Each structure stands twice: as structure tokens, then as C-alpha cells.
Image (tube, rainbow, N blue to C red):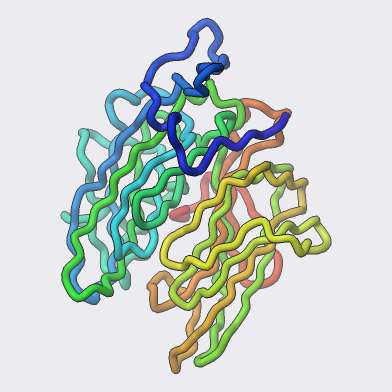
Length: 349
């Protein structure tokens, strides 16, 4: 099956009227053959609320957003989104929990405001009851639009909760008024033949000497055949380049499949064609850093520390339609490490 990429910058598809496909066949496409508009796509709006970050402060904002009433009781697939996230956001990850909450308003993950000082964010997330949330998508600063191929969609389980991870480092000379608003493009999961789950590969082995340039390279392998259709890289302020290459099971191939020089928000890329990986193959990802400080920098969650993380979306091979794969995750020390089924792992992603 050929994989046809729609578009990253969307026109008619995001502007389409919301409607229903032909109900006679649950797997029948609702695409108008003349206009290309997919009438099965519906819009799910999310608003995390507003908060303020003082000058020089670094915080993470975590709230749980309930599933809108219109979509309760339905298993969905996320096929695209529009996002509006202001500066000085450092990164934004939307995760999803299978546990629902009452009401129709966002609820802080911890405390009354949802704001966690970054120095407390790890402990805060662990004590807030949002373990086992899984990455749904990441987005960059500004107004963004992204659409996957119409046959692929990230699984959203019925009646769960959207959980935010909004990391802000306010380097402005005035308090920052923050918010994040989304228009998710969703379809009934029964209409999406290639369900997508997340792949998250990260390392905790980083040592960036003072006043130096350093390269850190790692290889993440898959435990079964997988088609990678979405990639993003993430690090902090010392990053100069993040790149990814195909690992054929023995050797990393020279051709780049992804590259970004953006450190302050994930640069998402839908691949023109899915990268087919067989068991034991994977992706080699490289972070190039420049440390201009007089201190050694190591791994950590604060923007004053560093990270090197590969995010991806994957589906089973094209002949395994309507099979939902589990999320995959790997945290390694160095070199090569395998991703594993992270469904029941006590981790934020």
C-alpha cells in the first residue's frame, strides 16, 4: 500500500465542514472524490486555561483536561491538529491518560494552580497521579498546523484525559501571560486502518564539558516490525543540531531522515513515506552541542541541563490493518538500546 502524504500546511482539509461518512461500511472513507475534503474528520477543541510566569522563572504547567462530552464513549484517532502556543514556551507535550475525570473544566495535576517550579516538576508529576500517561503529540511555539496521512492516526482511548506538559522558561523582561489552545482533527478509530502509537527514545548519559562542542550519538531499535511515520527531536539550549538516520541492524546509514536546529520547541516532521523497520533495526539519533558556559552540563529536566530525545509515531506494517500497537519507549545510558512496550511502565511518556 502506498502511503500518500497529505500536507503539513493545510488548506481545505482543516477548513472542511464536519459531517458523517456513509454509515453502511464502518471502514469506508468519507473523502469527497472531487474536493478531497474528508467529511469524517471532526474538530475537538482543547483549552488548558491561562497562567502567568514571572521574570526569570522556569516552571512546568500540568493540568488534566477532560474529554469533551461530544466525544465521550468513543475511541478516536488523531489525524492532525492546529495549535496556538505563545513564547516563551520551552516545549509543549500533550499526553493522554486512560483515566477520566469528572466535570468539563481543566483540573490541576497538583495543588490549586497547575504550576510546578521546574526544580520540583519530576517529584510533582510523580505525586500528582498522572503516571502512565502516554505521549499524544508535541507542538512548537506559535500557530502550527499538522496533518498525517488519512490512513494513519494516533490512538485516543475512550473517556480518558488529556494531560499537559507545558514547560516555560521566561527570559523576557516582563511577566509572561501563557496559554495553549488546540483544535484536534479526529476520526472514529474504526475509520483509520493504521493506528499510531508513540515511540520515545532518550538517554540519561550526557556529559558536555565547559567551553566545548560535543556530539552525543545513540541508536534506538524496535522489538518488532514497525513503520515510522512521524519524527521529532528535542534537547535544550546548548543544542546546535539534532539529526536522525536509519540503522539497518548492523550499520547506521549516512542519509539523514530528519534534522532540526531548533532546540526551544519540537520540530515535527511527517515522513513522505513511512520508514519500514524490521525487528532489530532502528534509528540512530545525534545531538550536537555547544557549551559556552564555564561548567560541565549533564542530563536533566531544567533548561539549564540538557536532554537528547527522539520522539516518533509508528504503526504496524501496512498489511496489519486496524491493529493497535502499544507505545514504545527506551531510556539508555550509551550506545545502542532497544525500545520496549511501555504500556505499563511508570513513566510520564
